[in-house]
Length: 392
Length: 182
Image (cartoon, rainbow over all chains, first blue to last red; front, side, top):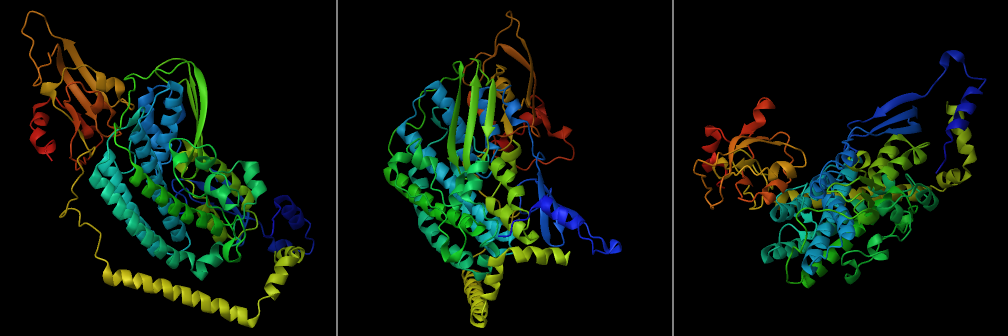
């Protein structure tokens, strides 16, 4: 990849003596967004372009800022959960799990085994649903419309299941302190078993349709390369870090809930078919492989699901002891961390969310210079950001 | 500008070698792979067109059956409400407004259908449906279970003000049969 130095570029440009003053060229500013299909949410990227080449990209965030962190200081611990849902609205279960585990750890609540299994089950299903959106919209950005519809067809089945157990399609408020809201019936387990069988075939079909496609490969391979050092410098997590070839997954390294009882691999970018490790193609492949792993976990959970209560003992009015805690979990887009400070009240004194997408957005200006505009769009799509989580 | 870009290319010697490595056979091979993989994809989509039945619901004519746990518009059965204000306190977005005053002790205290004494006189019970976030927390704290999510999701209005419903009004009490039953 050629590296475009912005300052060097400007110096070279001004020192060009042969240039005819009447034909003087300058950088053109183009706004990508605020409403662009490549961004899930509202993100404006100010791009300085030299013809078709991006010289500089400046992301402007804050269009979806809802003051969630400040607002949660005024409401009780249970009332925060609906707001936490709205961070990453494509992976709401993962957000809920992170927040609830934070509160539970501070409270010292014991969660029944069945509830823990159900929690991991819904989180892995949510990961599949979230990656399906990532896959569908990414391919949509690159110009293929059909896989988007196929992906949403499968996602619809997962959402249907979530609607049955929690009553809502996207913003569930399903995981509660002490357990989960609702139990899962045997019929729903059968539905999920059917879904697993069907989805395996669908995944093969996606791979045939998109992953093996030469045009898709040419669009994504060697594009938007994040080197491993870049990822460490910026603090990237999740599929972005794994796409750069580093095996880091909190579910494996610091297992929470019942992840240590499940068998699964952590897929990393391997540079298949002559692609560079850390490029868009590898990040895409990590997501596709993660869906397979999540499916494995769902099958194991359905086999092992213990009988028992789904809701443990939890106080009606939650009052946390004095102190602070930072806990992170592996959400579908990376590590989500909650820093909770309590002064012994009914409400949090401070709730800080460490969002993975925010770090990934901040990597964009680093990788953008020197790219073609179409490649830049491929890069923005490949890091799979949700702006609700960036702005909070 | 073109000068500049060519200058840059000279620095990247690797890229030049990649371009020069493109022989006639590899060029044609690329074209063959692109066409072959596209045809493969087309065959999959064609299979879909011929075998798959439509998944779209023709909405106004065909309606989806809602699951039992669905959380749609809130409905408060004002006759059973004891005005305990639990829902108002627990609401994270403060969309419930309750006005009530204590009943005088001389009169007989009426009871709800499950036998709880109504010690407060409920004057106003308003929910701003436009502000509600449908999280369902208020329904879980309700002691008499008079506040519940109905299965009614078709309640669009022309103005935001019309989305505020006072559940003590007689019109809304008469809605019960329509929106609470599935």
